[in-house]
Image (cartoon, rainbow, N blue to C red; front, side):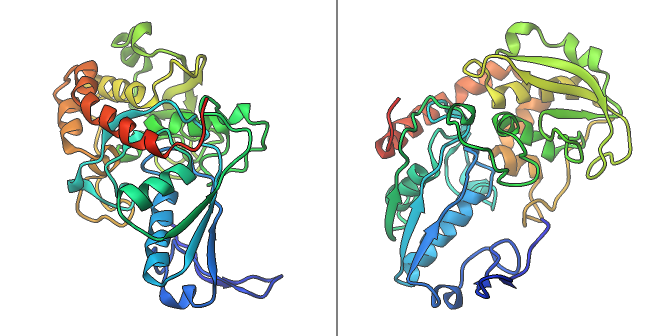
Length: 323
């Protein structure tokens, strides 16, 4: 929630309008200056990352003001085959979730734009410029392209790979690694006993990753200047790693062993001032309740399988790429 202002570009002397400042919705005054809106953003394939909602607001504005939108497609850095998590409940619509899509949705930003425009009924004049050479099974490391961080706390492709799960810590008093050089790969808090947390988890519960016990000290954000006991997630087998399920298991173990110190973060969170942040992030308050009740994570995942299968069936109709 650190906003940016409108500026005049110092070289080109043209106005630059912020969509994360005084407004998140483009205005008529902005659109009056353009003939066509070109959208060129590196998305990260996770429902709570706000770029896709900025795109949605732009598509809605393009329809409203009679302008064409052109999306320059980019890779989904965590591949276009794997989908994971529950779909967003309409009760928890916010700037980190506006449509009933899963946490990890397996679409490029161009494909998702088509889905928002055609299936969810935005209905603007939209064209997608497709990529050459991208296949659905690619992680960003397979593309040969340089990683330019889409935001400061996603500095590497690995941080994007763990993000669909590790973002859950934002809704807690556990550090998600902000204020370190490895945000989202690292997580912890001063009160965590790593041996106890590990005691509730066997190797089969965390496929594709190794957890390295560590101590870190954030220079900003939660627990700034305090020694945090925690872990670094090392991805060993990306195609077996399920980030959302993995972090749900880790979260449940932390709560089980540290009920006296663990807390859910209170509002505000991304322009929502009433609802609990973790409910906005997961998109369903029942998940928080089931975690607190120590329900079986596999049973939780099974409960949202039908809606996930339905999403995959619908979204696959907007695929622009094979593989």
